Amino acid sequence: MVFPLEPDDPPQLGPYRLAGRLGEGGQGVVYLGFDGAGERVAVKLLSHGDRETRARLARELQALESVASFCTARVLDASVEHQRPWVVSEFVDGPSLAQRVYDKGPMRGGELERLVIGTATALAAIHAAGVVHRDFKPGNVLLGPDGPRVVDFGIARAEGASTMTSGLIGTPAYMAPEQINGSAASPASDVFAWAATMLYAATGSSPFGADTVPAVMQRVLFAEPDVSVFPPRLRGLLGAALSKDPTQRPPARDLMVALVNPGTSGPQPSFPPSQPGFPVSQPGGVHGGGAQGGPFAAAMASRPPGTTGPASPSAPTAPGSGRSRRGLVVSSVAIVAALAVLAGVVLWLNRGPATTLTTVVTPAPTGAAKSDPVPSQDDTGPGQDDTTPSQDTTPGQDDTTPPQRTRPPAQENAKIPERFAGTWSGQTTSTNPMNADGAVNTVVLTPGESTAQWSEKDATVDCTATIELVSVKGNTLTFSLGTSKGGCIPGTIWLDLEGDDLTYTYRDTPGMELVTETGKLRKQ
Image (cartoon, rainbow, N blue to C red):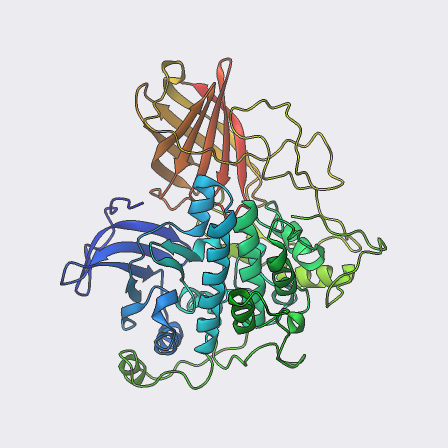
């Protein structure tokens, strides 16, 4: 979906005319642009870029030239000379995997197998070029008309690497155990993230839960995801790719070969235990010996090289249960140590404390081997009987825990009913640990319309947006929150009419799924 340009957006970057916004995140804004010939392109304007960042970005862009273009959104142009670098890539006319699952639910059959094979092939091509993705997740897989494309690698992490004091880069629900324990990203960690993303596509939910960051990280370290949703011939491959031990994960190339040749007995790791995958010689995951002499080489030559600073769901199995684990066995002390490394680190996914997510990771109590209960993500949808029991709850969780909602399919020509008319406002609370007090949310509902006006405000946040009506079911309206003025995180909003109140529920975008907001709105 393309959103209008905002008043402070540039009308043009270099020779590229900007026509609208495709998305916004902590790394910058992605625009729909047009080149001189009128062809559509995607233009990413990064949030900032110091001298070191721009030099690193130029090196990474040079290496990305050697990545096969069939499996990615090919980089067409870039400018690293300005304070805010920008990168132009091929426009992929299709939704992200996250949006596809959000709209239509889990993938099945041939559609799922095509995704598994296509993305494994893409990852093999990326690694063959000497590049580590470092943030493989549902939002970074685009479903084009000619197949899946893996995007946002290398350049997506360029300026982020120098701003996080722990060196932690990635999305928690798709990070490999060794990354949580402080190791650098590698091809093996990409394989783990790929497998977790495929499990998301098959189930519609993050394989390690969607509540607090410490709880998600604990499950990454301890939990064995259930891969039974896949056909038998894929289960072994996905299970091996999700091994806790990076040396036991198959390389992407072996995965690709096994997937396209069902007669193989399965891939075996081909790298030594001390070195899971090729070495990463540059901060951006660029392997030495990248492409030379391409259009980005001049950008490198024209600047002094930057100096690289130091790197400053299933439930977990109860200890002693006797359940076997593949590869690395992680003790309860390991997660305490891992979270201690992350203590005080702020992951600025956006800039405010409410719907905009700011998460501080704090150490878990010593000996805490069991995560907090996580509601199922595949339970009662909006407007359904709330007494329907969950069929997919986390083992051992309190049965009174309400199920998390999932967004229903879009209805054609959905309109706001008369009974919802008015301006509704109230205080909401958030699962974001930095802002449990939440914010004031307001919605303006006009009967007969398919959109509504939404806002969220507190001392540091002032977001406004036009939200789109997805469905009407009984006394429940479901809206989609896209790009907002103020940079709040996209997601889904449910409004339940209960007497004189509207019960407000917000969940952030699939693939991240770390924040929920709830509260009562009263008519003003």
